[in-house]
Image 1 (cartoon, rainbow, N blue to C red):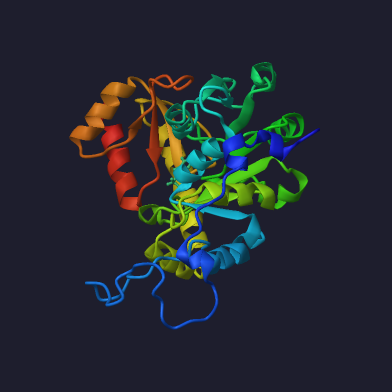
Image 2: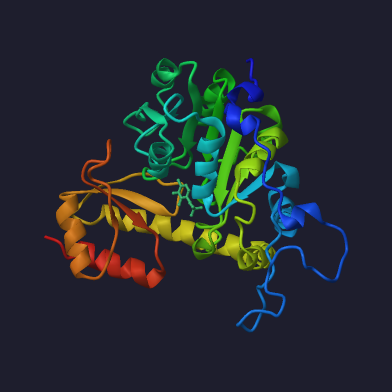
Length: 349
Ligand SMILES: *Cc1c(COP(=O)(O)O)cnc(C)c1O
């Protein structure tokens, strides 16, 4: 494989001289900070947030590095994974010229972010059992294909992609391969995060929004070899991770045990719920899941969706999505919420 990062990066980004913040230009010890035009008197809150946050998120990255066993210089942080996705487009894809490949049914943001950045999307649909169609992917690649987006476990199907197929893509494509592992904590499959040294073209996305229970704080992670991280750092807004998020997530990273307990509980409820669903007349099929949701085929997805709404229960109607005819995507709730859902579904004729 002949991978050349330099030839993948947009020319204007390769040449970009990044914004140098006040906190970049002075990083020594001082006690009087008159360099950033902040309000030196304080904040109208109990705790003060009058100072700009660390643009490099050093403490937070050190805490993530310890938990994920990845060097801090191979970590990029975004305001949610959604910002990481956008920054990957802006770093590698020339608007109106380059293209990317997605494998539907999958996470909708890859396509939306492509459209915002005026980047063409080529589609290699998954096979009927939601695995990669390697031949279809290979046929779509041309010299302007910059990124292949993979999602494993996949949203909305819930399954993991075959590891050997992902390796085939990583080994044969000279562009960037993104593996979105938003749901990896709920999976039986191993993350690719310990394989970063093997693949100079690999970017892994993870998030604090799912297993970590911190969706409201907006923190997403990208892991890659250091040269990719360095170029993403140039493109990001200087203060993209706010002070409160940096502090709270740094503390939360001390609670791996509590998170693992929640993951175990959610996985156990997912397996139990799948069994119960299969006894319900309106349910036609429950797809195997490695995530914190189940894809469920029902007799008439739209009417089931509307009926559940009348009971105050919102699920995600995916019935208009390719390969997901008559399917609802249902997040695992609390024990009580799951019971309400099962009772409502069971009451349908
Ligand atoms: C939920 C989800 C994310 C998370 O996005 P955030 O912006 O980090 O909240 C990323 N990818 C997939 C596939 C998801 O389902």
